[in-house]
Image (cartoon, rainbow, N blue to C red; front, top):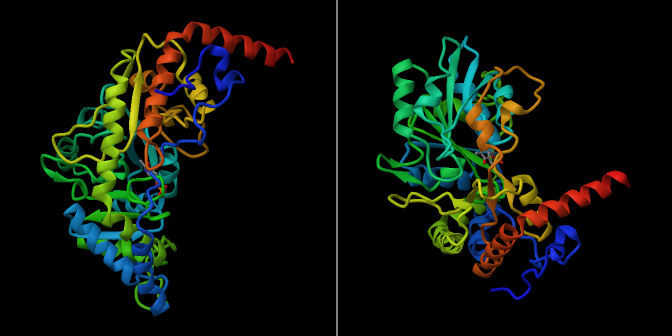
Length: 409
Ligand SMILES: *Cc1c(COP(=O)(O)O)cnc(C)c1O
């Protein structure tokens, strides 16, 4: 245990004490592959002087990712954002307007729908798993539904089979946002081959780091053809922009090199993640007012994200808890807050009353994880949480006093 752990509430960095961790520790993966391996891949495109536009490394990466996900096709793009926007545009039923998506999700999701000219209809998530289910999605289906966007939560998967089945019954396409479930498997197989398509991100903070980047997996060859055109200006043959809505959303070769080098070591990354997760699980079991969202270990899981719920006995406000931790260089984050249906928006959406989501949205947070977090850091983080819990009443008073002073000044 760290000897620097606070003696009194005044020693918290939030109140002017020194920071518990000497370096900021975030919730991003930030894994670095072997440098020589990255260079080895990079030489292939560099020597050819072929830097982008469906180069050798992009093709290799697409082949390897399709195999990894047991899907027939993989189409890489420049970000997860454009993977989603292009997949939404391609899959939505023409003439219908609404896309069903959870409200408690990635903060830019409604904006992505706006790029695809779709109107979000927000659905609930299950308060225990934080995942959409066939029930919560089904409650939102109507004759304007153009597409279901089933987003996997940060820990574990949503009910893939139930939602796919629902889509089949109602003849509505189903797109998965599988960014947080890139490595997961279920009884029915590896994430990546379900529904009409699945979208992924290779942003540096995600499990597979390609600096930036994204991709779509699917078993549909027509969709693959269309997406490959859309990401390349809508070209059909040289200088012939036939497909409307074409963009420049290509992945370039150096990003593909980084992603390939990281894909080579993904199993080791998961082993390291598991060590951190196990340490959190062991230590957090000492604090009954905090519930760790446990990974379902029956099938493959990435052990990447550490998500906790603050239970009733944790009376300090979640946002203030995060602020206290951030003060100590512990870059904990609120879990998808505010939920999308509570945010002011400048484009069309269907207003929603979501009681479960409202409740859940003030209770969960993410704790630091990824390459920079050591087991000693985890011991310190949990020790500090235990300290905060014991002193929570005194801390609340001190925060109020501090806010009063700030107001009167
Ligand atoms: C990060 C993220 C995205 C967007 O990916 P980018 O590559 O950063 O554009 C989409 N969905 C989820 C769930 C994400 O976490």
